[in-house]
Length: 100
Image (tube, rainbow, N blue to C red):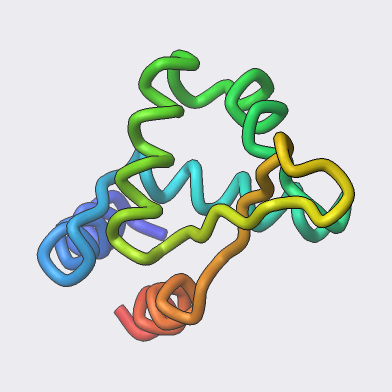
């Protein structure tokens, strides 16, 4: 992908979904962890994500939840544990990005 195309795609995502490159990195990491481990524990994700500080990751994660791009789901066995799940809007964003 050329730099110009990447910039165009990021600008388009900002306009349509109000996400930037850090948000996209978080969504990608959630997807990859879910694919690899089957679940994404919120606190484990915050501690292990290397794309931003823990505080920034936590704030961005909350933003993505408010925007409807991530969902925080309780664990049935341990009510203190929360998991991150992509939403249908996340898959809409992925499909949109493929078209850009």
